[in-house]
Image 1 (cartoon, helix red, strand yellow):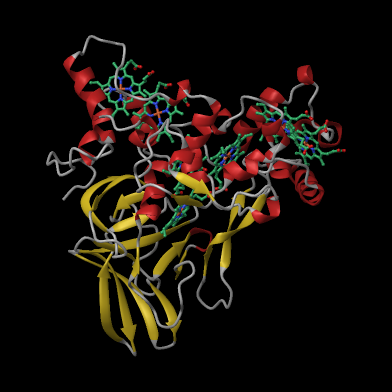
Image 2 (cartoon, rainbow, N blue to C red):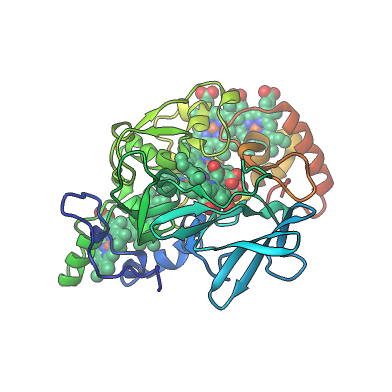
Length: 400
Ligand code: HEC
Ligand code: HEC
Ligand code: HEC
Ligand code: HEC
Ligand code: HEC
Ligand code: HEC
Ligand code: HEC
């Protein structure tokens, strides 16, 4: 079954204001917004959850590279057959438990983890993929003994990594259940709201170039714009309403309680809290318009293009406004290519960490700090790299 294309069966009840039937799926949007679609499918947002396939699973299934050893006699192997991709547990060389990979979570920029479905319940599998090591690893915060295959996946996890998943009502305190009605990835309708009505209207009125029934975040207030991105990039939030009720344009505080937002940058994890870190930066506090989309494009993958991002800094920090870098003379012309490594250094994440084969301690993924500030130690390091790179520098960031 192709989960990418929304099927026409309507299960959602009339009471459900964000039900599956209200979504069209981005394949439908592509009929009229082809350029945006063609570019958006290469973003990490789109790729952050996909149905399992060879195209999307990053790790190797090749003999000799396809396993993670928990102990000399306890191994989980990654195997493929005609019926799909599997994580298979071996004890003393004998295959035991075997679970199919149904959903891939993570674009693979940093890593991926895998979900298996048993009836209507979803579980995270023990072996994940860690991109910086190009290797299989133990899933984050998983025990190494015993090896577990049954950690439940919750709606909160899916709310940040998919556009919509239809939940099946279950009694309180029992494990959540999900139907096959899933809109994978952070797709068009996460930011533009459910689009079936827009599609129906524009299809019936093909000559009408004025749109209806769709949300354009370009028209948002600053707070609405920040709330949309803050849904997933605002650190740990406790929900006060069921998952998937928040629609782009809504007030985040109507759906979530900010439990752990503090103003001390040391306390805010760099994983998933770009909003918290940006909020304590002078750029953000002393400018009344800055949002995430001041620097980030909504439909394009610009990852690694440090020079382009630096141009966006310079748009505000130019001579006219006299907010230029005090290091300009010392750095010389190379400064135009990289404001980022000195003022938004890479920092180890506290939560995206994985245990690699043979290591005693987990390895952390490196994440850009959004606390834009002055970092003397980083500056020294970067100045040295600039000097090394003087003849044939690398414009994609000194640290990449
Ligand atoms: C049958 C053609 C058609 C389809 C399918 C379609 N749109 Fe549109 N859309 C239009 C037209 C026409 C406009 C108005 C002209 C423009 O802005 O391009 C528009 C405008 C928009 C706008 C800008 C609205 C504004 O207020 O400025 C957004 C956002 C949008 N569409 C998103 C989507 C999404 C998301 C989907 C898929 C769920 C989708 N569209 C599917 C035809 C379509
Ligand atoms: C529903 C959750 C969700 C929303 C809403 C969301 N994001 Fe994301 N975003 C993610 C996830 C998850 C990832 C990591 C995807 C991956 O690599 O698997 C991500 C990744 C990113 C990245 C890294 C991509 C790169 O190329 O380096 C940027 C930048 C980003 N988001 C910006 C935004 C902005 C700006 C908004 C608001 C307009 C936003 N996000 C809204 C969940 C979300
Ligand atoms: C992460 C959020 C996000 C996702 C996902 C997203 N958009 Fe947008 N989109 C925006 C924002 C924000 C704007 C307005 C400002 C801008 O262009 O950055 C916008 C603007 C638009 C517009 C108005 C015309 C324009 O270019 O300004 C259209 C049409 C549109 N998006 C269609 C789509 C379609 C189709 C998809 C899926 C293939 C999609 N968007 C995915 C956030 C998103
Ligand atoms: C509050 C929103 C949120 C929740 C809840 C959440 N994530 Fe994430 N996740 C993110 C964001 C945002 C990123 C991108 C990393 C970053 O830059 O902060 C990410 C990154 C990841 C990545 C790495 C992707 C890559 O290649 O870059 C994986 C894998 C992942 N999450 C899995 C999960 C799983 C599994 C769950 C549930 C147990 C979960 N996440 C819960 C927001 C969330
Ligand atoms: C929308 C405009 C805007 C953008 C874009 C912007 N800044 Fe700023 N930035 C400001 C303002 C305003 C201040 C505060 C100046 C003041 O009043 O001292 C500031 C302050 C700073 C400071 C001083 C911080 C401190 O703690 O003393 C640094 C460093 C800085 N910005 C670097 C950057 C970098 C690097 C980028 C790009 C990643 C960037 N800025 C993007 C507006 C902006
Ligand atoms: C090699 C590291 C490095 C690079 C590259 C760099 N900066 Fe700086 N920047 C610094 C340091 C260190 C300071 C503090 C200098 C001081 O106070 O004497 C600073 C200060 C600043 C300030 C505060 C100025 C003030 O009046 O207080 C701004 C704004 C700024 N930088 C912006 C930028 C922008 C924009 C870029 C890219 C065009 C950039 N920086 C590139 C290291 C760097
Ligand atoms: C002043 C510019 C600026 C603003 C504003 C900004 N970012 Fe970023 N962001 C960057 C730069 C530069 C990078 C690094 C890009 C790269 O390495 O490809 C980045 C990277 C990211 C990443 C990827 C982190 C990683 O290390 O993989 C995410 C996620 C992200 N931003 C989300 C956001 C969100 C959400 C907001 C709003 C709360 C935001 N950004 C506001 C400049 C900005």
